[in-house]
Picture 1 (cartoon, one colour):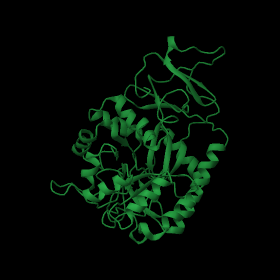
Picture 2 (picture 1 turned 90 degrees about the vertical axis):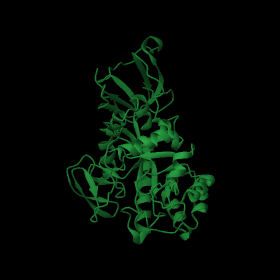
Picture 3 (picture 1 turned 90 degrees about the horizontal axis):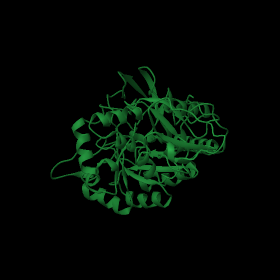
Length: 384
């Protein structure tokens, strides 16, 4: 799966960590001396791209130390994620900016660093989830650190992120929010509506200014009503807005996912994990940003019982969408090309096309990950 088309008896030609060509075996000319590898499973697909993830393997991205980020990258690569946007949660300005500075250094260091021995996800940049959010729809975000868009904190955060800020989740109904949308767009960020109690009119005003995405749709949003459709009314009816969904069977009911797909179409939905440090770990207590959450049966909650992220991985999310009737190629697209397009990096990530990074997954017919190749690996480890 490229994932726009399926190619039978396909070949992916790679050189120096980049894809050179893709096509049927009888149509791709292999240079003399090319080393050939047989994929360990029946399907080759692009690596998954997660635009909303807080941690994995017992570590949180806001720790932002080199060893912890490497462990997160290696953990999520086991489940098919080969690129991610590290997502912060609302915290004190000092803690937030300290994390942003460390994450920015890590992203830059990774791009210029040495090759890895095994698959590891690339840190693409930073997603600010808060602090410019609604007190009413804050979820587990600490209320004492929620900030006004007019506070000046955004400029401080942007400077701390050192050019690595990619996504801003914000509540468009807040005073000064529309000006914040414009400032974030001027900085090259994707503006996402989330943790919001916005009315339809307030959401539409933000879209008119450049908001083009919605954070974990249905969760931490004003509910839909037939006479008060709220932010969901805008998200579901505006084609320029892409919609995240946490398809873990916990955050969103099956019927709500079907409504989202019917309204948006499969090509405007993006699978995310909202995963926290507990992902790929046993039940217990874990950190989410600067506070503690507990995990029982794989479900993450704060001390008051509110959902606090997930332990989802993108391979499970893709399989869940297939269970709901989405064609496999379109479900894969929701975790690859569509998030890459939202970030504006589809020439490099999310597709098996000439010039893209050689981030490949090897999937069996049931879409379980049987292996992965990331473009910065020293040597392919995909069997012979």
